Length: 231
View 1 (tube, rainbow, N blue to C red):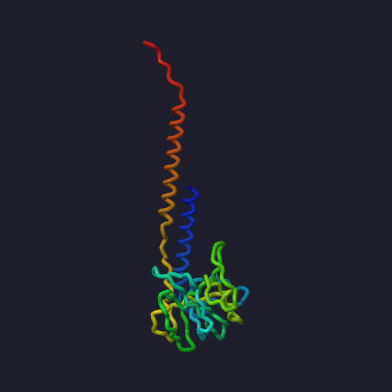
View 2: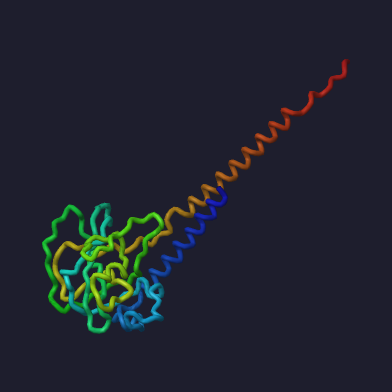
């Protein structure tokens, strides 16, 4: 239980670090993707984690015939998927764009923005499968993915693929449609980790106190009877 308490405190520290990173980077000026990263797509010294949640713009042409879906998403308590469309740029090759969330219950009538389009969004890192995560198909025609696996999605595109994807919040010229809706910004709260840690510490003290009471009772029960001297 003590280990669980310290685990919750570590989770709290990780959450605070994440919140600080997202807050700091998302408040930086919105700049061209090349100026922000200072790197050309495919450069060996490019470190995606250093730019996660930076706000950027990138100009190019959408190729909706190559669009895919990242499934098993939810937003505001609604199940759905994220619409992922490759953007072909002059300087960075393909840039994969998460245009936003679409509920499963909605039959979207595609409204395409004019070409070329300037996308503004957050730079996000490629996602990898965990030990128990669902396995994505590697078939060339696969349109449904479990995560934003840039190398896997990029195999269908050919050519250079930028090593991060852009989570859109606006595009210009804009299309006035309800769906896809921009993906919600993460909630930057500390969560219940501190209270959970206190609970585990409290349970530990209760267990230790109960153990002491049991040992004392066992010890007293094993004491020999006190001899009595007759009056």
